[in-house]
Length: 213
Image (spheres, one colour):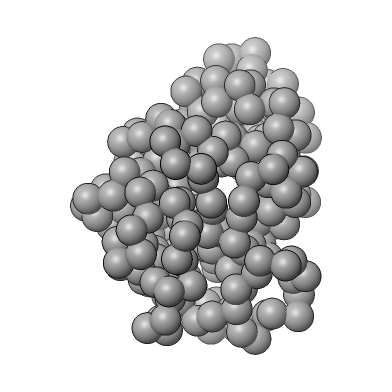
C-alpha cells in the first residue's frame, strides 16, 4: 500500500481541529482544506484554500491517497445560508467527483448514527451523502458516531455510563479525540473498507486507535 496522504475537508470544524494536529503528531501526511474566506483561521504548511466547486480541486488533491470528508451543518446555521443540501450532500458530491479525477483510492465519510434508517431531514441528508459515496466506485469507509460527549449540549450528563450499562453501543457518546483517532486510523490503514462503522464495530476501531491520541 502506498504511503497515505490525507486531504481533509472540514479541517476547521470541531473534528478537523482535533484530527489535523493528531495526524501531524503521528507522522501522517495531511492536506487540510479550508474555504478561501476561512483561510486565516488555519495555520498549516500544507493547507489548501480553495472552493470545492473550483475546477482546480482535483489538482489541489494531487498526491493525496485519501479524502476525509468532515463537512456538515446543523439547523442553527441555516440563518447563515447553510443547508443540508449544500453542506452535507453538495460538498460530498463535489469531493467524490474530484477524488475520482485525482486518483484518490479511499474516501472516509463522517456521517451520523441512525443514517442507515434515516428519520428527519438531518439523517436523510446524511443518508444521501452516504449513497453518493457508496455509488462512487471509490473504496470507502463511513463512520457513524453518536453525540459528542465533550461538546456543550450534544450529550446529556451520565449518558455514556447509561448506554454502556444497557449495552447500547450505537448511542454511546464519543469524545472528539476518540472520533478523530478512529477516523485517522481508518484513513492511515485504509481499512476497513466498504462498511459503515456504527456501534460496537466503531468502538472496536476507537479502542484500536487509542495510541494515536
